Amino acid sequence: MAKIVTLGELMLRLSPEGNDRFIQSDHFRVIPGGGEANVAISLANYGHDADFVTKLPKHEIGQLALNAMRRYGVGTSHIVRGGERVGIYYAETGASMRPSKVIYDRAHSAIAEARPEEFDFDEIFEGAQWFHWSGITPAISDNAADIVKAACEAAKRHGVTVSVDLNFRKKLWTSEKAISIMRPLMQYVDVCIGNEEDAMLCLGFKPDADIEGGKTDAAGYHKIFEQMAKTFGFKYVVSTLRESYSATHNGWKALIYNGEEFYESRHYDIEPIIDRVGGGDSFAGGLIHGLLTKPTQGEALEFAVAASALKHTINGDFNLVSKEEVESLAAGNANGRVQR
Image 1 (cartoon, rainbow, N blue to C red):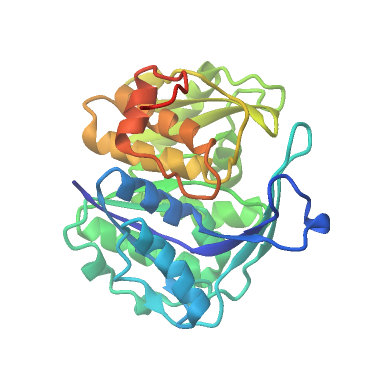
Image 2 (cartoon, rainbow, N blue to C red):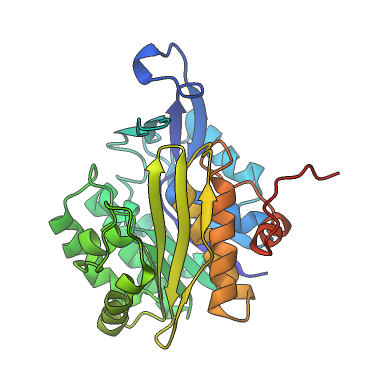
């Protein structure tokens, strides 16, 4: 299988039990996770040689985070050790009409204060086929943005396919700052993944779709996909289309464009949602696997959407499903019968 490199921040998520609120909790579950780390876990589960790059402190909490990646078969040999802290985020799981809530405590984390020269990207990308990053990483700090740029430049020197999940986070930066950083980085990108909000806030493109009103007609995205591909030279433009009926009930599908034709996936009605954190990351991991192994963009997208639908049924950030389980759902086996 392919060697795939992902780069980003590995954090610790602290969550109340079940649907408890922060203010009523006297203890929290510790769950490692982070956008690009979640993608690496998915790809390792599908049999790829997934390598995660970040910086973590040398102390025991840093080791706890690193061990989480090793547990699921992700390569950690290029993780730099140093710095003072592991980023933390608190996540409260919503229910019905009460939305989930995230509070960040990640300032001055090890990767936020790392420098590009700490990473030997020419060595890291030796023999790699794919590099994935997300818009969360350059949003962490100017240093992290410089690291992403250095990684993208090295990936291109080595002929590596580059994908990005735009992943705008308003608690980390403004749209103006995002556009100023993200648009120049798009020159290195082959596969662009992002929903309607990401495309608008990170790149300045807005699809003709009423998302807040629950209208996610894929036809509203066609023109904007064409414009994005033309502007940045993307080989693929991809968007998930989420219909949020409540915190525990979503509609889920996706759209892909390869510069010639569009393909819209089947629609999944997901209820109840167990944990939607990492849903987009599981989609990105499934898409990368699909584009590397499937003969058509449609089959690649169906794998990605099925993988992400399954993630919504799993606690934690990681999508702990096998390739065979995803293939089964993508083939239409959605009855949830006990497997004996």
